[in-house]
Length: 154
Image 1 (cartoon, rainbow, N blue to C red):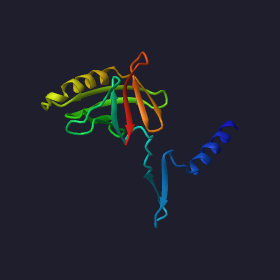
Image 2: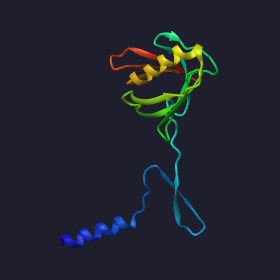
Image 3: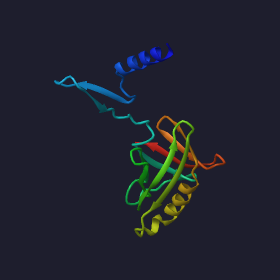
Image 4: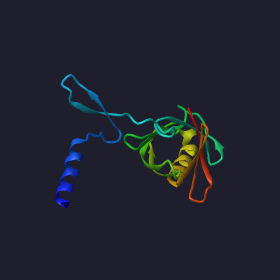
């Protein structure tokens, strides 16, 4: 009896069709259904440019370009500019907890007037462990909650 009920349940489950979460189907002329990938929307933090407006309480300066950061969600890479040199690296971000682990480095163009800002930004990026978002503004803090960077979404 148990075997008969169990095989009936398995048989019914096999007849039902369901689509994996995050997928949608589209009918074709042969009536076969194929899964189509659904593009995930940006969380408003990643995949947008964040202009750096303050570094350790000092106004960020423009040298050859605007200092900025961009968190690429597809590859978990950080891109940006110090104002003189490119910033590259990777990151791990938890948007719910507001935690972040950055591993970033800058290029080596000689920008004498930008050296102090670049050194400070490099140190700050290594110390950042958390962030908060308020509207179009992001603040990044160290483990003690001290604000190290202020950024604005472009």
